[in-house]
Length: 257
Length: 75
Image (cartoon, rainbow over all chains, first blue to last red; front, side, top):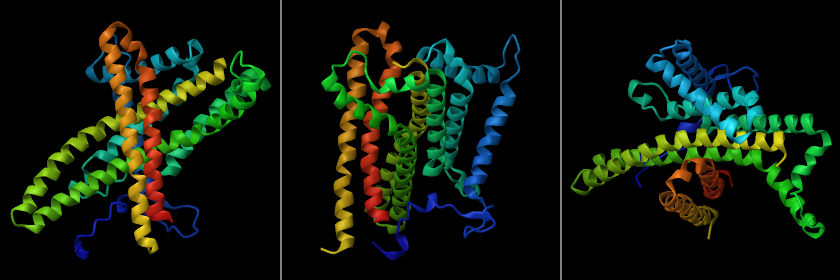
């Protein structure tokens, strides 16, 4: 491969400071922080446009009520009537992940902005997973005190099997925050790398000229359109899965099996 | 073999795991569709379980991807 056409798919995930510098200063305004604020502003606008409480709703209000009703029913079916207490948190992470994922897919480079996917950073997804896990721990110990540890002992297991099952259950419980964070972060990274690599195939195919070059470009472009459609689906599925798994873990803490 | 070529081969081997996860995800949705067509009335109530199975199958493939990335960029 020639040196000038070297593909650098990891460049898009680089954190760069917009104000201040990264070496040692505690207050740095990075591009990650900027895009988080953009996501927040978009969610704010979306909610503000729809929270009207009109008897005959506008289309926008139907959209907002659809999302809130969706999260509400997810928690009531998975946790029960007490699940409504946890709607604020699950709704927050669902909306944040959905908007951040979709904003990362936007072709903002066309208008000159440097796009950045907030959820492609392990620290961001990790913090959200740790808060979810913390809510589960606090609720569990608050409601059931030390009885919460019976979560690791399935009902009616023989004693010999308990020796085996309790450590397995414990490990699978402790792995939950990692699996939550890792799933979202890797799904976003993988999708963006794929799109980047095939996007650079299109460009270098056209540059190569001849007959084969544009043909490869066209093939890559068609493939990329398909991948993009899949990515939009993945964005929604990952937000849904994060919210669903959080509500299932909350169910464990509230109802103990 | 020097480290650079060993890295590339290792990352390529790690990518096999992603293909295995593809089989898993296909299996999850395929089995769901098969049984959902037999009993469409019960299909909607099982959608949560469908996505749990999907998430579990997908995660194992994503771990393979993470291993490949660690070999390529972090070792």
